[in-house]
Image (tube, rainbow, N blue to C red; front, side, top):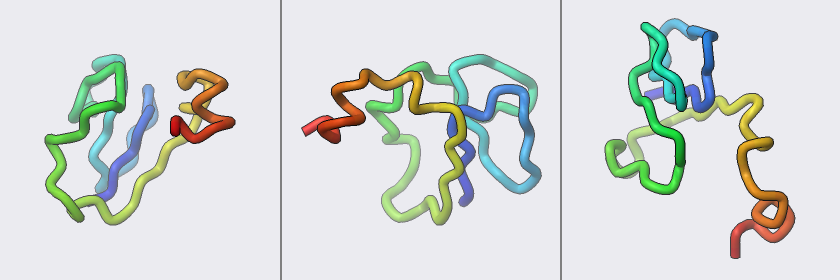
Length: 66
């Protein structure tokens, strides 16, 4: 499966779409990425995430959340 995170209004044919807002093409609506249990281990072969870094705290980006 190919997963488009933070897709907004953009639809990519052949991809599953995840966003905080519900659009007709969005398969998964969620505002946090802390629980992705709906995806089986090793089921996502490619992730496309564009314009999502601004939704994470700066400290998480600098220190990797560790």
